[in-house]
Length: 322
Image (cartoon, rainbow, N blue to C red):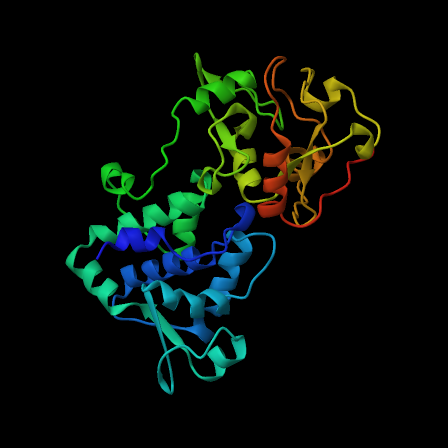
C-alpha cells in the first residue's frame, strides 16, 4: 500500500481553490503524537482544544469545528475512531464525540507501516506540508503539532507531488521589486547578497498558485510570515477608498512607489501595543505597495482575491489618519 499516495489524496472540499486543511492538520497532529507515543490514542475531549487552535491558526478564515475531520478522516483509510460503545465513529457532532468518549488514532495498517519503516513518517509529514501550506509556515507548524520530521528525499516525493516549483521565481520577483520589501521597503544586504528578503506567493503554490511575477511579492522575512498567516493582505482598489494618499516619502522612507492601486490590508484581529508592532504592522494599513518597477506586471486581481478569501483573517483596519 502506498501511504504517500493515500496522504496526497485525502478527500477535501476543493471548489474554486477553497482551502480545507482540516484533515491534513489532524493527520499531522496524529503523526506528531505517534512519534512520541506509538501506542497512544487521541481522545476527542482531550485534544479538541489543540485541534481548534490549529484550525484557528493555520486554517481558512471561515472556522470549522475539529469534530468534522475527526469523523471524516476515517473514510480516507488512514484513521480509525472508537467510542465507549465499540469501534466506529458516532458522527461529526461535537456532543456525540464528547459524551460517547470518542477516541481516534492512525489506522492499524499505517501504524504497522510506520513501525517497519520509520522514515515514512517524515515523508508523509513533508508531503502534507508541501501540499497544503507555504514553506514559511512549515517549521512552526511542525513545532505546533510536536513533529520532528526527518528530511525527505525529493525523488521519493516527486511521483506524488506532480508539480515542480520554478527555481527562477525568487530571482524574478526580487528583481521586479528591486530587492525591496513591497510592504516596508527593507533592502538589507551582506556585501552583494540580499539578506532577509523572500519571494512570497500570493496565491499559495499548494493551491495552484503559479510561479509567475504577477503572483509574487518581494517581502522581508517578517512581513512574509505575517502575510502567510493572514495578518497582512493586499487589495486592489481605488486609492480614494483609503482616504487621502500620503506622500511617497512618508510611505517608504523617501523611496518612490509604483504599486498603483494595490493597498496593504492589516487584520483587525492583530493586536500589538509596542511601538515596533505599530510601526511594522498596524501603520501599514492602507499604504500602497512599494513596486513593482515600471514595466512589470503587478499582482493579478484574481490572486489578490484568493488570498483575501482564503488566508486573510477578519476585517481590514482603516488607514491611520495622517
